[in-house]
Image 1 (cartoon, helix red, strand yellow):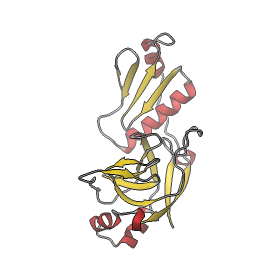
Image 2 (spheres, helix red, strand yellow):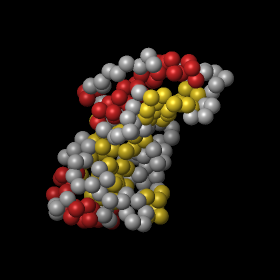
Image 3 (cartoon, one colour):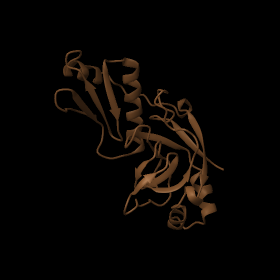
Image 4 (cartoon, one colour):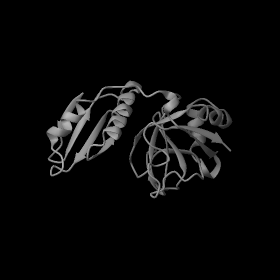
Length: 207
Protein backbone atom coordinates (compact mmCIF):
# COMPACT_ATOMS: atom_id res chain seq x y z
CA UNK A 1 0.00 0.00 0.00
CA UNK A 2 1.39 3.38 -1.06
CA UNK A 3 -0.16 6.68 0.08
CA UNK A 4 0.55 9.86 -1.88
CA UNK A 5 -0.73 13.42 -1.57
CA UNK A 6 -2.54 14.93 -4.54
CA UNK A 7 -2.46 18.64 -3.88
CA UNK A 8 -3.99 20.11 -0.75
CA UNK A 9 -7.36 18.34 -0.78
CA UNK A 10 -6.79 14.76 -1.90
CA UNK A 11 -4.66 11.69 -1.38
CA UNK A 12 -4.40 8.50 -3.40
CA UNK A 13 -3.98 5.08 -1.86
CA UNK A 14 -2.35 2.69 -4.35
CA UNK A 15 -2.35 -1.08 -4.03
CA UNK A 16 -0.89 -2.17 -7.37
CA UNK A 17 0.00 -1.10 -10.90
CA UNK A 18 -1.82 -4.06 -12.41
CA UNK A 19 -5.52 -4.90 -12.63
CA UNK A 20 -6.34 -8.25 -11.07
CA UNK A 21 -9.01 -10.10 -9.12
CA UNK A 22 -6.89 -10.06 -5.95
CA UNK A 23 -6.40 -6.28 -6.11
CA UNK A 24 -10.12 -5.79 -6.79
CA UNK A 25 -10.88 -7.67 -3.57
CA UNK A 26 -8.64 -5.27 -1.65
CA UNK A 27 -10.40 -2.27 -3.24
CA UNK A 28 -13.75 -3.73 -2.18
CA UNK A 29 -12.46 -4.20 1.35
CA UNK A 30 -11.12 -0.67 1.78
CA UNK A 31 -14.33 0.75 0.30
CA UNK A 32 -16.27 -1.16 2.96
CA UNK A 33 -13.76 -0.04 5.63
CA UNK A 34 -14.24 3.63 4.73
CA UNK A 35 -18.03 3.21 4.63
CA UNK A 36 -18.00 1.75 8.15
CA UNK A 37 -15.42 4.22 9.51
CA UNK A 38 -17.42 7.19 8.21
CA UNK A 39 -14.58 9.74 8.07
CA UNK A 40 -15.69 13.20 6.80
CA UNK A 41 -14.34 12.55 3.30
CA UNK A 42 -15.42 11.41 -0.15
CA UNK A 43 -13.62 8.73 -2.13
CA UNK A 44 -13.50 7.23 -5.61
CA UNK A 45 -12.39 3.60 -6.00
CA UNK A 46 -10.65 2.59 -9.23
CA UNK A 47 -9.19 -0.70 -10.46
CA UNK A 48 -6.04 -0.46 -8.36
CA UNK A 49 -6.38 2.55 -6.06
CA UNK A 50 -8.70 4.75 -4.04
CA UNK A 51 -8.61 8.55 -4.26
CA UNK A 52 -9.81 10.33 -1.13
CA UNK A 53 -11.01 13.95 -1.20
CA UNK A 54 -11.21 16.04 1.96
CA UNK A 55 -11.67 19.55 3.33
CA UNK A 56 -8.52 20.50 5.29
CA UNK A 57 -10.61 22.77 7.53
CA UNK A 58 -12.53 19.68 8.71
CA UNK A 59 -9.89 16.94 8.71
CA UNK A 60 -6.16 16.98 8.07
CA UNK A 61 -4.18 14.85 5.67
CA UNK A 62 -2.32 13.33 8.64
CA UNK A 63 -5.59 12.29 10.26
CA UNK A 64 -6.76 10.58 7.06
CA UNK A 65 -3.45 8.76 6.71
CA UNK A 66 -3.83 7.60 10.30
CA UNK A 67 -7.29 6.19 9.51
CA UNK A 68 -6.03 4.44 6.36
CA UNK A 69 -3.20 2.80 8.28
CA UNK A 70 -5.82 1.15 10.50
CA UNK A 71 -7.20 -0.69 7.46
CA UNK A 72 -6.87 -4.46 7.65
CA UNK A 73 -7.87 -6.57 4.68
CA UNK A 74 -10.92 -8.76 5.20
CA UNK A 75 -12.22 -10.62 2.17
CA UNK A 76 -15.90 -10.09 1.34
CA UNK A 77 -17.73 -13.38 0.87
CA UNK A 78 -19.31 -13.95 -2.55
CA UNK A 79 -22.62 -14.68 -0.83
CA UNK A 80 -22.66 -11.10 0.48
CA UNK A 81 -22.62 -9.63 -3.03
CA UNK A 82 -25.96 -8.82 -4.60
CA UNK A 83 -26.73 -10.32 -8.03
CA UNK A 84 -28.82 -8.17 -10.35
CA UNK A 85 -30.52 -9.79 -13.34
CA UNK A 86 -30.58 -7.58 -16.41
CA UNK A 87 -32.86 -8.55 -19.34
CA UNK A 88 -31.21 -7.89 -22.70
CA UNK A 89 -32.40 -7.89 -26.30
CA UNK A 90 -29.30 -9.06 -28.16
CA UNK A 91 -28.51 -8.19 -31.78
CA UNK A 92 -30.69 -6.59 -34.43
CA UNK A 93 -30.97 -2.82 -34.38
CA UNK A 94 -30.02 -2.85 -30.69
CA UNK A 95 -26.80 -4.81 -31.20
CA UNK A 96 -25.11 -3.61 -34.41
CA UNK A 97 -21.73 -5.10 -33.46
CA UNK A 98 -22.85 -8.54 -32.31
CA UNK A 99 -21.86 -10.30 -35.54
CA UNK A 100 -18.35 -8.83 -35.34
CA UNK A 101 -17.97 -9.90 -31.71
CA UNK A 102 -19.41 -13.37 -32.43
CA UNK A 103 -17.02 -13.88 -35.36
CA UNK A 104 -14.10 -12.77 -33.19
CA UNK A 105 -15.00 -15.57 -30.79
CA UNK A 106 -15.48 -18.12 -33.58
CA UNK A 107 -19.18 -18.47 -32.79
CA UNK A 108 -22.55 -17.95 -34.40
CA UNK A 109 -24.62 -15.10 -32.97
CA UNK A 110 -26.84 -17.54 -31.07
CA UNK A 111 -23.80 -19.31 -29.64
CA UNK A 112 -22.27 -16.03 -28.56
CA UNK A 113 -25.47 -14.86 -26.86
CA UNK A 114 -25.54 -18.08 -24.85
CA UNK A 115 -21.81 -17.68 -24.09
CA UNK A 116 -22.01 -14.01 -23.07
CA UNK A 117 -25.02 -14.56 -20.81
CA UNK A 118 -23.41 -17.57 -19.10
CA UNK A 119 -21.08 -15.43 -16.97
CA UNK A 120 -21.70 -13.64 -13.71
CA UNK A 121 -20.13 -10.21 -14.04
CA UNK A 122 -18.96 -7.97 -11.22
CA UNK A 123 -18.66 -4.19 -11.01
CA UNK A 124 -14.97 -3.41 -10.66
CA UNK A 125 -15.17 0.34 -11.16
CA UNK A 126 -17.58 3.20 -11.85
CA UNK A 127 -16.70 5.94 -14.31
CA UNK A 128 -16.87 7.52 -17.77
CA UNK A 129 -20.35 8.91 -17.05
CA UNK A 130 -22.62 8.80 -13.94
CA UNK A 131 -23.82 5.25 -13.36
CA UNK A 132 -21.53 3.61 -15.92
CA UNK A 133 -20.28 0.35 -14.38
CA UNK A 134 -17.20 -1.45 -15.67
CA UNK A 135 -18.11 -5.14 -15.51
CA UNK A 136 -15.59 -7.97 -15.35
CA UNK A 137 -16.30 -11.67 -15.77
CA UNK A 138 -16.13 -12.26 -19.53
CA UNK A 139 -13.38 -14.69 -20.58
CA UNK A 140 -13.71 -14.72 -24.36
CA UNK A 141 -11.59 -12.98 -27.00
CA UNK A 142 -10.64 -9.40 -26.21
CA UNK A 143 -12.88 -6.98 -28.08
CA UNK A 144 -11.27 -4.00 -29.87
CA UNK A 145 -12.95 -0.63 -29.54
CA UNK A 146 -14.40 1.03 -32.61
CA UNK A 147 -11.85 2.91 -34.70
CA UNK A 148 -14.26 5.84 -34.71
CA UNK A 149 -16.54 6.18 -31.66
CA UNK A 150 -20.22 6.66 -32.33
CA UNK A 151 -21.49 10.16 -31.70
CA UNK A 152 -24.54 8.77 -29.95
CA UNK A 153 -25.20 5.46 -28.19
CA UNK A 154 -28.70 5.03 -26.78
CA UNK A 155 -29.26 4.53 -23.05
CA UNK A 156 -29.42 0.89 -22.03
CA UNK A 157 -27.00 -0.26 -24.72
CA UNK A 158 -24.77 -3.16 -23.66
CA UNK A 159 -21.22 -2.62 -24.89
CA UNK A 160 -17.95 -4.53 -24.83
CA UNK A 161 -14.30 -3.46 -25.01
CA UNK A 162 -11.25 -5.54 -24.16
CA UNK A 163 -12.46 -8.04 -21.59
CA UNK A 164 -14.92 -5.57 -20.08
CA UNK A 165 -18.64 -5.14 -20.44
CA UNK A 166 -20.73 -2.06 -19.68
CA UNK A 167 -24.23 -0.62 -19.94
CA UNK A 168 -24.72 2.97 -21.08
CA UNK A 169 -26.93 4.69 -18.48
CA UNK A 170 -27.64 7.69 -20.73
CA UNK A 171 -27.57 8.58 -24.41
CA UNK A 172 -24.07 9.69 -25.31
CA UNK A 173 -20.96 9.10 -27.40
CA UNK A 174 -19.15 5.78 -27.09
CA UNK A 175 -16.50 3.63 -28.71
CA UNK A 176 -17.43 0.21 -27.31
CA UNK A 177 -18.91 -2.57 -29.45
CA UNK A 178 -22.67 -2.66 -28.93
CA UNK A 179 -24.22 -6.13 -28.70
CA UNK A 180 -27.67 -5.47 -27.23
CA UNK A 181 -29.92 -3.28 -25.14
CA UNK A 182 -31.81 -3.41 -21.86
CA UNK A 183 -34.93 -1.45 -20.95
CA UNK A 184 -33.86 -1.49 -17.30
CA UNK A 185 -33.10 1.97 -15.95
CA UNK A 186 -29.49 1.67 -14.86
CA UNK A 187 -29.03 5.01 -13.11
CA UNK A 188 -31.53 7.17 -11.22
CA UNK A 189 -30.15 10.30 -9.57
CA UNK A 190 -32.88 10.01 -6.93
CA UNK A 191 -31.72 6.53 -5.95
CA UNK A 192 -28.56 6.19 -3.90
CA UNK A 193 -26.55 4.06 -3.99
CA UNK A 194 -27.11 3.37 -7.69
CA UNK A 195 -28.47 0.04 -8.94
CA UNK A 196 -25.01 -0.91 -10.15
CA UNK A 197 -22.24 -0.08 -7.71
CA UNK A 198 -18.81 -1.36 -6.76
CA UNK A 199 -18.87 -5.08 -5.97
CA UNK A 200 -22.39 -5.79 -7.20
CA UNK A 201 -22.78 -8.70 -9.58
CA UNK A 202 -24.74 -8.91 -12.82
CA UNK A 203 -26.32 -11.72 -14.81
CA UNK A 204 -27.58 -10.93 -18.31
CA UNK A 205 -30.87 -12.61 -19.25
CA UNK A 206 -31.46 -12.93 -23.05
CA UNK A 207 -34.95 -11.99 -24.24
